[in-house]
Length: 200
Ligand code: GAR
Image 1 (cartoon, rainbow, N blue to C red):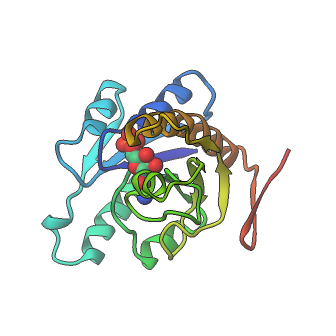
Image 2: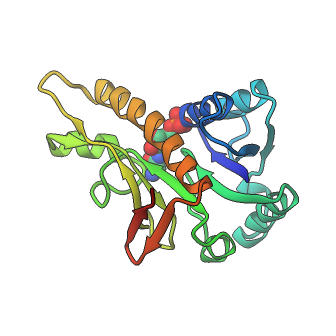
Protein backbone atom coordinates (compact mmCIF):
# COMPACT_ATOMS: atom_id res chain seq x y z
CA UNK A 1 0.00 0.00 0.00
CA UNK A 2 1.15 3.51 -0.81
CA UNK A 3 0.84 6.19 1.85
CA UNK A 4 0.80 9.99 1.57
CA UNK A 5 1.54 12.07 4.67
CA UNK A 6 0.18 15.63 4.82
CA UNK A 7 2.05 18.12 7.04
CA UNK A 8 2.18 21.84 7.75
CA UNK A 9 4.84 22.09 10.42
CA UNK A 10 7.71 20.49 12.30
CA UNK A 11 6.84 16.95 11.24
CA UNK A 12 7.82 14.96 14.33
CA UNK A 13 4.94 12.60 13.61
CA UNK A 14 6.09 12.29 10.01
CA UNK A 15 9.54 11.39 11.37
CA UNK A 16 8.08 8.74 13.69
CA UNK A 17 6.17 7.26 10.75
CA UNK A 18 9.29 7.27 8.54
CA UNK A 19 11.35 5.63 11.31
CA UNK A 20 8.69 2.96 11.92
CA UNK A 21 8.55 2.21 8.23
CA UNK A 22 12.35 1.96 8.03
CA UNK A 23 12.38 -0.46 10.97
CA UNK A 24 9.84 -2.61 9.12
CA UNK A 25 7.08 -1.95 11.61
CA UNK A 26 4.89 -0.21 9.04
CA UNK A 27 4.75 -2.50 6.04
CA UNK A 28 3.85 0.05 3.38
CA UNK A 29 5.46 2.59 1.13
CA UNK A 30 5.58 6.25 2.16
CA UNK A 31 5.33 7.55 -1.37
CA UNK A 32 4.54 11.19 -0.89
CA UNK A 33 4.68 14.06 1.57
CA UNK A 34 2.29 16.91 0.83
CA UNK A 35 2.66 20.28 2.52
CA UNK A 36 0.78 23.56 2.25
CA UNK A 37 3.66 25.48 3.90
CA UNK A 38 6.71 25.95 1.63
CA UNK A 39 9.44 26.23 4.27
CA UNK A 40 8.24 23.82 6.94
CA UNK A 41 10.67 21.35 8.49
CA UNK A 42 8.54 18.39 7.40
CA UNK A 43 9.85 18.97 3.88
CA UNK A 44 13.44 18.66 5.09
CA UNK A 45 12.55 15.41 6.86
CA UNK A 46 10.98 14.08 3.64
CA UNK A 47 14.05 15.10 1.65
CA UNK A 48 16.42 13.47 4.17
CA UNK A 49 14.43 10.25 3.91
CA UNK A 50 14.39 10.35 0.11
CA UNK A 51 10.61 10.72 -0.06
CA UNK A 52 9.01 12.75 -2.82
CA UNK A 53 7.63 15.98 -1.37
CA UNK A 54 5.15 18.37 -2.92
CA UNK A 55 4.33 21.88 -1.78
CA UNK A 56 0.79 22.75 -2.76
CA UNK A 57 -0.22 26.15 -1.43
CA UNK A 58 -3.82 27.28 -1.18
CA UNK A 59 -2.92 30.81 -2.25
CA UNK A 60 -1.89 29.61 -5.69
CA UNK A 61 -5.41 28.45 -6.55
CA UNK A 62 -8.55 30.47 -7.15
CA UNK A 63 -10.82 28.04 -5.37
CA UNK A 64 -10.48 25.40 -2.68
CA UNK A 65 -11.84 22.93 -5.22
CA UNK A 66 -8.99 23.62 -7.65
CA UNK A 67 -6.48 23.41 -4.80
CA UNK A 68 -7.76 20.02 -3.70
CA UNK A 69 -8.06 18.73 -7.26
CA UNK A 70 -4.34 19.37 -7.66
CA UNK A 71 -3.66 17.32 -4.52
CA UNK A 72 -6.02 14.53 -5.59
CA UNK A 73 -4.30 14.34 -8.95
CA UNK A 74 -0.93 13.91 -7.23
CA UNK A 75 -2.36 11.18 -4.99
CA UNK A 76 -3.81 9.36 -7.97
CA UNK A 77 -0.51 9.52 -9.82
CA UNK A 78 1.22 7.80 -6.89
CA UNK A 79 -1.63 5.31 -6.42
CA UNK A 80 -2.12 6.38 -2.80
CA UNK A 81 -4.30 4.11 -0.68
CA UNK A 82 -4.02 5.91 2.65
CA UNK A 83 -3.79 9.60 3.50
CA UNK A 84 -2.20 10.38 6.88
CA UNK A 85 -2.72 13.87 8.29
CA UNK A 86 0.20 14.69 10.58
CA UNK A 87 -0.11 18.27 11.75
CA UNK A 88 -1.81 19.33 8.49
CA UNK A 89 -3.57 22.48 9.65
CA UNK A 90 -6.18 22.71 6.92
CA UNK A 91 -9.71 21.38 6.74
CA UNK A 92 -10.44 19.04 3.84
CA UNK A 93 -13.69 19.45 1.93
CA UNK A 94 -16.46 16.89 1.67
CA UNK A 95 -15.48 16.16 -1.93
CA UNK A 96 -11.92 15.37 -0.91
CA UNK A 97 -13.00 13.21 2.02
CA UNK A 98 -15.46 11.32 -0.22
CA UNK A 99 -12.67 10.60 -2.69
CA UNK A 100 -10.76 8.87 0.14
CA UNK A 101 -13.68 7.73 2.25
CA UNK A 102 -12.47 5.91 5.39
CA UNK A 103 -8.93 6.15 4.06
CA UNK A 104 -7.85 9.35 5.82
CA UNK A 105 -6.40 9.29 9.34
CA UNK A 106 -5.68 12.22 11.63
CA UNK A 107 -3.89 12.69 14.93
CA UNK A 108 -5.16 15.15 17.49
CA UNK A 109 -3.26 16.06 20.69
CA UNK A 110 -6.23 15.71 23.06
CA UNK A 111 -8.65 12.98 24.08
CA UNK A 112 -11.49 13.56 21.61
CA UNK A 113 -14.24 14.59 21.75
CA UNK A 114 -12.68 17.04 24.22
CA UNK A 115 -10.62 20.02 23.10
CA UNK A 116 -11.14 19.87 19.35
CA UNK A 117 -9.42 22.41 17.09
CA UNK A 118 -5.91 23.67 16.64
CA UNK A 119 -4.93 24.23 20.31
CA UNK A 120 -5.78 20.89 21.87
CA UNK A 121 -2.84 20.83 24.30
CA UNK A 122 -3.17 24.45 25.47
CA UNK A 123 -6.94 24.22 25.83
CA UNK A 124 -6.77 21.03 27.92
CA UNK A 125 -3.95 22.42 30.09
CA UNK A 126 -5.75 25.69 30.74
CA UNK A 127 -9.00 23.89 31.49
CA UNK A 128 -7.17 22.06 34.24
CA UNK A 129 -7.83 18.47 33.22
CA UNK A 130 -5.95 15.77 35.13
CA UNK A 131 -5.78 13.41 32.15
CA UNK A 132 -5.34 14.25 28.49
CA UNK A 133 -3.50 12.59 25.58
CA UNK A 134 -3.56 12.05 21.82
CA UNK A 135 -6.26 10.51 19.65
CA UNK A 136 -5.93 8.89 16.22
CA UNK A 137 -9.19 8.88 14.30
CA UNK A 138 -10.71 8.49 10.86
CA UNK A 139 -11.45 11.79 9.16
CA UNK A 140 -15.07 12.60 8.42
CA UNK A 141 -16.81 15.83 7.42
CA UNK A 142 -17.02 17.25 10.93
CA UNK A 143 -13.76 18.47 12.41
CA UNK A 144 -12.04 16.08 14.84
CA UNK A 145 -15.21 14.00 15.04
CA UNK A 146 -14.55 10.79 13.08
CA UNK A 147 -14.48 7.30 14.62
CA UNK A 148 -11.69 6.91 17.16
CA UNK A 149 -8.97 4.34 16.44
CA UNK A 150 -6.49 4.73 19.31
CA UNK A 151 -6.05 7.02 22.30
CA UNK A 152 -3.31 7.25 24.88
CA UNK A 153 -3.96 8.73 28.33
CA UNK A 154 -1.38 11.16 29.71
CA UNK A 155 -1.51 12.35 33.33
CA UNK A 156 -1.14 16.05 33.98
CA UNK A 157 1.06 16.50 37.05
CA UNK A 158 1.28 19.43 39.45
CA UNK A 159 4.68 20.33 38.00
CA UNK A 160 3.62 20.29 34.37
CA UNK A 161 3.78 23.36 32.20
CA UNK A 162 2.12 23.47 28.80
CA UNK A 163 5.56 22.73 27.32
CA UNK A 164 6.35 19.67 29.43
CA UNK A 165 2.86 18.34 28.82
CA UNK A 166 3.28 18.86 25.07
CA UNK A 167 6.51 16.86 25.18
CA UNK A 168 4.86 13.85 26.79
CA UNK A 169 1.85 14.04 24.47
CA UNK A 170 4.13 14.12 21.44
CA UNK A 171 6.01 11.05 22.71
CA UNK A 172 2.70 9.21 22.92
CA UNK A 173 1.66 10.43 19.48
CA UNK A 174 4.84 8.95 18.06
CA UNK A 175 3.84 5.56 19.46
CA UNK A 176 0.15 5.41 18.60
CA UNK A 177 0.24 6.92 15.10
CA UNK A 178 2.59 4.31 13.59
CA UNK A 179 0.56 1.61 15.36
CA UNK A 180 -2.75 2.88 13.95
CA UNK A 181 -1.23 3.14 10.47
CA UNK A 182 0.07 -0.41 10.60
CA UNK A 183 -3.35 -1.65 11.78
CA UNK A 184 -4.93 0.10 8.79
CA UNK A 185 -2.34 -1.34 6.41
CA UNK A 186 -3.03 -4.84 7.74
CA UNK A 187 -6.76 -4.34 7.22
CA UNK A 188 -7.40 -4.71 10.94
CA UNK A 189 -9.59 -1.64 11.43
CA UNK A 190 -13.29 -2.25 10.98
CA UNK A 191 -15.61 0.74 11.23
CA UNK A 192 -18.97 -0.10 12.78
CA UNK A 193 -20.96 3.12 13.03
CA UNK A 194 -19.09 5.38 15.46
CA UNK A 195 -16.90 2.56 16.67
CA UNK A 196 -13.71 1.13 15.27
CA UNK A 197 -13.22 -2.51 16.00
CA UNK A 198 -9.59 -3.66 16.04
CA UNK A 199 -9.40 -7.16 14.60
CA UNK A 200 -6.84 -9.68 15.83
C1 GAR B 1 0.67 17.21 16.63
O1 GAR B 1 0.75 17.38 18.02
C2 GAR B 1 -0.76 16.91 16.22
O2 GAR B 1 -1.47 16.21 17.19
C3 GAR B 1 -1.30 18.31 16.04
O3 GAR B 1 -0.28 19.02 15.42
C4 GAR B 1 0.98 18.53 15.91
C5 GAR B 1 1.91 18.35 14.74
O4 GAR B 1 3.21 18.09 15.21
N1 GAR B 1 -2.49 18.31 15.25
C6 GAR B 1 -3.55 19.08 15.52
O5 GAR B 1 -3.60 19.86 16.45
C7 GAR B 1 -4.72 18.88 14.60
N2 GAR B 1 -5.90 19.47 15.13
P1 GAR B 1 4.32 17.54 14.23
O6 GAR B 1 4.34 18.47 13.01
O7 GAR B 1 5.59 17.66 15.02
O8 GAR B 1 3.98 16.14 13.85
